Image 1: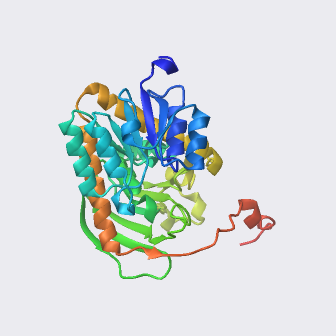
Image 2 (image 1 turned 135 degrees about the vertical axis):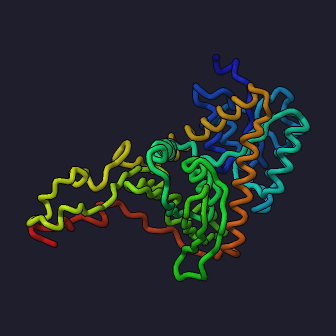
Length: 365
């Protein structure tokens, strides 16, 4: 299919919407960028000019032949019109891919409108589609066919809580939570919620802070996850990798009579004490922004296109996202109001800044 033959798509918003525009411009995208819907800022004008598409200021200006609306505008949770925009497109029968988060009631309403007008509404949480996370999920699924999960430890930023819950749900095969409780107020930036997720005991630490002047910044990390089994632990070190397997540290019984600890006949002692699954080095943040994130959104766009062609309304996706939205809201209710912070830009360090000249000398302990 040539670019001109691909159905047209419009992107609403040019904040994070810029990543959607980049994804739509990829040659393997099932849609082509055909318009920007925004309020007319200099950035929006520049984006429309860069991609050679019109700039619209109202849904009514968008042509009837548009086949996809990517709504990348905040919704009610942040006081934005995203849900209203989505419903206006859905009422016209236009499929909508909407950037998270949505309040569960907003999402349920969008799904009803989509069903009423015979179209599709998907929520995009991005990170479950990013390649290192996909590698972790695939490895976790293989691991859990061999041994059941005994525990999950996860850490995330407040802004990406719902995306972390989706990653855990994909890895564990379900996202139904029971017995959720929040630990009492803790010193430092993190709060903890524990319970069971898909029948597995889990502890979730959330950096429960937000700078209202820079809501996308000041996260200490985005996602970190460890799934533990009898034989070892699988860890996603951060959103962009690496994925690490750590075999269980188990001292064999024959050590009780061995003169030297290294003389045991147990073969598992020969395993590397940690092994990287996939690339050992994570990509740069520039590469993540320019490649990993647009490619992840492209996968979300392709999944929506599949449901449009299948004609089933994307009901399975909608119900899964509704479950995640409700779970995210429940966790946030347990955590209480987010702590507002005001911080300057951080001094970001490279490993060489930290470790230069710190290699241990021979014989050092």
